[in-house]
Every structure is written in C-alpha cells, then in structure tokens.
Length: 282
Image 1 (cartoon, one colour):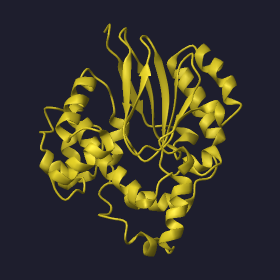
Image 2 (cartoon, rainbow, N blue to C red):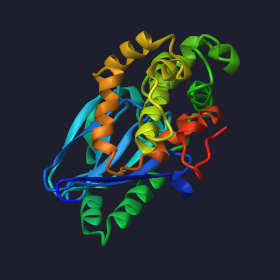
Image 3 (cartoon, rainbow, N blue to C red):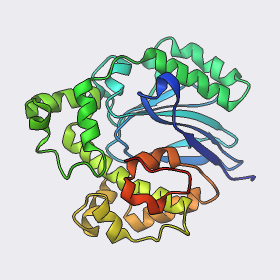
Image 4 (cartoon, rainbow, N blue to C red):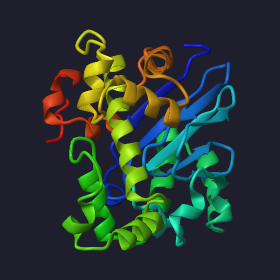
C-alpha cells in the first residue's frame, strides 16, 4: 500500500547458515522511514539499494537509520561471535558503530553497483550473502559454545561459564570481546532481552493466540520480575515494555514477517506464540 513498508525476514541458507541468523528485504513506501535497530548480540550488514553497503556493529542501545521514500533495503543479521572473524579485527572496535562497508573491505565499493543493478531485491540479497559468506573467517569455537549457553532459557547468569568451558574468566571475556564485541555479561543481557523481543514480535504476528502478559513474559525471559524487565528495556531500547509493544504493533501489524528472528529465541514451552507449521526450537 502507498505510504507503507513491507518487511520480510528469512533464515539464511547454504554457506551463510552458520554465520547469520536471518536475512531480510525491506521496501519502503512514499513517506520514508526511520528504522529502529535494537541490540541483538550480533552485527548487521545492510544496503539501501543504490547506496554503499553499511556495517552496523554490536549495539548496547537502540539506534535509528533513515530509509528514503521508495527505498529498498537488503540486509543480513550476523550471529553473535561472527563479526571478529569477518572483519579481521577485534569486534569491540565496532561496538555501537555504523560504518561504510568499504572502510573495511575495499572490494565492497564494487559491490555497490552490482547490488543497485540487480534485477530484483532477491537477487541483490543473494549477491550480498555471497560476499559475506566468502569474506568470513572461522568463528572462535569456544565463543560459539559460550553464545549457545547464553541463549534465552539456557542460563540465569554467566558465573558458571568459565568452569563449564575450562577457561579463566579473564580469557573468556577477552575472547568474547574479540569475537562478539562485548563480554559475556553484556551478551547475556542482550540475548535475554531478545527473548522478550521475540514474545513482542510473536504477539504482533499472532495477536489472537498470544495474550499480552508482561509480568509472565518477564519471568519467562529470565528477568526477576516486570520491574527488572522495565529497567532493562529502557536501557537497551529506550522505552518501557508497554510502549515498545505498542510501537512494534503500529509498525508491524500490516504484515511484516519477523519469524526468522523470533523463533530461535523461543523455547518449546513457548509454543503458544507460534503459528501452526512453524516449529519452536528445542
């Protein structure tokens, strides 16, 4: 519809699967859009077609970027722990940074024309995925294990991680900062918050199936109570939970599809949020 945007996320396929949690295409109507990004633990590669690709580093608070009227964006959300190997530098140097991709990869300047000239947004996204898959180095396996153990529903904190991974707390923090951009405690806070965001997005997707219950969602997401959730929500997204829910509802109720992002953040016991045919990960 005129003036509205469409947004569709999908799980990556092929070589990009181990590196990215989702890919997306966004098409904006005739009013332009200020797009919000909230912390998710990873980084994002995205491109407004016709402009240079950008790299958004790991976030510690929400940020916005403007998409022009009529603009089309293709993007990739990298998994936590991938960034350091992709850019060939400590990931903590890119925390809260939005940089031109060509500042990191000289060859990316040539990709701008390729993306802009692609026959369809899907073809442009395929070119961007191919570039990322070719450029990425090997992720740190220990950090990958730490990320898996910090996913929503896995742990209540980070104190036991060094012993579980047979590494000192200092070394774990250093390796996390190199690969992810932030240490284990900050990553845990962000992933826990993503467990709440998953409920928000799923409730917008399935309003008839998921009754809003912020107190319940807070505990299910790993917070002590709703007040704890509210503090973290203001810190990471700049708004209280109720306001964030309303903002997602207003922006996404026209049919935006965020399932590729929120399904991995839900547990099997959260099946009330999920459409039939969309299995919840174990």
